[in-house]
Length: 481
Ligand code: HEM
Picture (tube, rainbow, N blue to C red):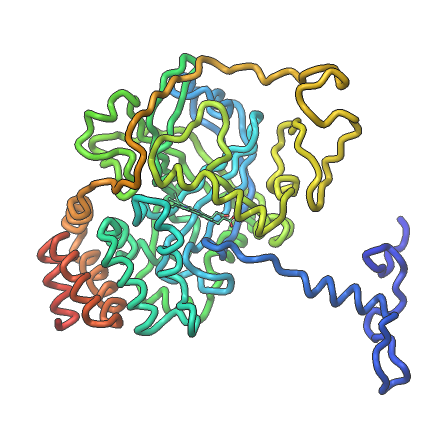
């Protein structure tokens, strides 16, 4: 083996990487110090923008195996054969927090899975809370602004942060279902091994005959669900702020796998109108007594990333990454998610982010798209357009897989609110909680809401009263308003 020695990024040998090139011991540094200039300018560019949302995360590789063939429901290649494992990469994250924040803060946890299927990448991007606070994606940037630090002092705690958060929520009462989950102990966790994942949005599965089902996804942790109370969360935030990332890494490094069962709820698309609520509305759960859970398969995470930046920070998930057999419903929030992930990734990582090893499909990529910064997929063909005769005509079109369902949509064009009941489901959830769960929920809400300005407290109280009068009264008592 040739002996390793220090080099520049150009491969030239470096004899001294510790002392800059100066005039004498006390003189200025020379512009000709290429070793210093290269090292410092690489350092200057070490960071890429953090994700606008879900900035802090941890990830692991593994595989997914379905329990049986799901051919009657979907033609998705990775769900056909119980003997076929599909490689996956999963990234868990803390939604509203910035890089460097604590893993245990009260927040939504993200749970994004990339399946490297034979028909391209399929990204299933979930959260650990089953509902979303909005019905319209146009409000998403406002929601994120309201929960992030304020633009003046950039601080997270205290009356301004609490007032901004509750101000927004009190004006968007469709967030009530979400808030009841967030302020229960579900909102504070110390391990990614014990959180559930929820697709939240309604997707479609399509089989070879062109039949379609509406689908809601679940990930159930095989280690069981666990959360922590706010006191433990606050303690860990101070003593072990990266506890969830560390726990995931250490578990896998010790040779254990981290496992989740995929489950789905399905109904035929034609049955949409028969349901007692809007099943395309992500502020609602689909109750399990009405829509039983169907076990689909198991995901085993058993390989740590070799390098955090390369594989976790640069990983890029998008709801637009679907494969034949999986489709979008007209859930407005899902429709609004199709574009922005790839858009922000082109900015956050670069035009050719899908060529990075963690993001690259394991199936062949073949089209006439070209160039852009950091291009590695260089064509040696003079033909880079379609149609053509020079390159042997049109490339073979991908074979049509099964029958394509026909969708007919009509309606008046306009900006229209989706109507909905904001209080029924969160009220039911509150009433189904144990005494201890209710106690924690109430005190967690009081702890945060009591810091907000009083008119906002009053506005929020009305929503809690309408959710459940006992819940509202207990919060009112705690707030003393
Ligand atoms: C209005 C709807 C939404 C919009 C516009 C939106 C947009 C975004 C954007 C721009 C990112 C940053 C992506 C990146 O930098 O790579 C992101 C990340 C993420 N979002 Fe959403 N989002 C929405 C709703 C949701 C919902 C409903 C879920 C859960 C089902 C979700 C789960 C996630 C997760 C888990 C990540 C982090 C992905 C990763 O690990 O890289 N989002 N979202």
